[in-house]
Length: 211
Image (tube, rainbow, N blue to C red; front, side, top):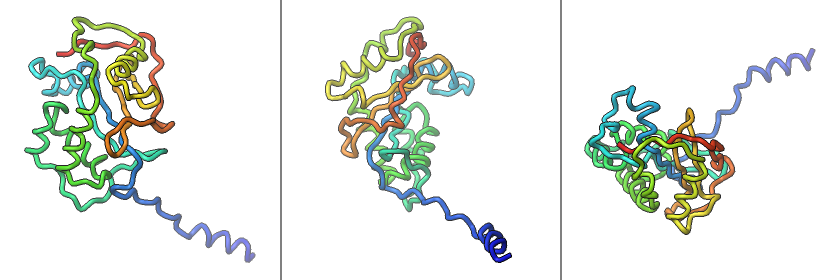
């Protein structure tokens, strides 16, 4: 009877809450670059996104700069910092595409950086400029199919200090989706954690020409 009572009482004790991710506590960054034309073909055109207007001429666009643990990642951290202003978000349009993306990236990832919104956006731009984007993809005149590994090799050739374990290429619905590059907190190339190194294995992934 006593054992049964103890079992019932144990069920009434609330489970411990998951630890809250703390702003500024992370190990490295993942810089995510999306091929804008493919994003438009998969999603942006249906949204009538201004990013997909031919006058914008995006190639590799900044998706985000993500604080990362050696295993796993924080998101939506509590912070006393205020979100970026509309003006600050619009100032990122030359590399991001839409101000809504900037706001979303701040909420999910920037809040975990331990930086102010202004400094996080500055850090994101600096990370974007750290990586040389291969110019060959901007010369595409028509859609092509290629192994995803070719995209990785192109980035490795343009960035001699980048190692094969410091970059991964992702695909979505048969398209090249993103290139993700791992950076230290000082924005130097480093090896990615095992949960980030998940390369697309497609040998016929689609790349559409920039617009």
